[in-house]
Length: 308
Image (tube, rainbow, N blue to C red):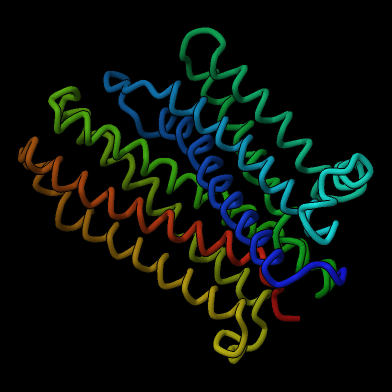
């Protein structure tokens, strides 16, 4: 680390990277979860739009990606002063795995926006959007700790990478789908969505949610076994403590989801609307807040070196 890279500067760089990663992860979840929601959950007669929201999500992904890139450049340069030189920017872009994947994600974002704005809505277009967004989200494995398993041999490395991709995609489906479900519930509270459509969406979301949550937990356990080989490290290291915080927040999301399914969904199915939809919408908002907190913990983890 260069001598002029003081504690204050290091903190500013880390804060930029954490904030950029948080927005980037949330945008990736929206970009993947929205078309998947339309394909697998949204009733055909309950279209609530969302093109502007998704284009805004792509713009947020772009801006946060630039911020993340600037943070990485500042880390390599030893501070912001030398981070924007032509030579350093070229080195980050062309000579690092982060730069290669950043360029690929930029192209994927351009393709996502082009497909989203082109023509009328259709299942073919949503399928293309879901595939592009899945690639965009999965590529984040290469710029995080998803490659850490390489130090444990090729077999463990492949298992870890596969588990991390599953973890990312299922989390994005859960969080992005939850945002879309919240919009439908809000529309129902205003009388802009039929309660029959809400019931159909809730049934489909529950089925998809069971699989998404189960795979998030299973893949998360696999990742933890690779990243935290010794249980004591969960308490003794910064990485372990932040990982524990993330686990607590994920379990909070699961608990809220269970309350939604067991206590708040049945009244809607039995005919309590729009009051039931309003109560469930409020709970979904809380779950969305917990999801953002989880993403913040994940963004923070990316700045902490994992245990060997």
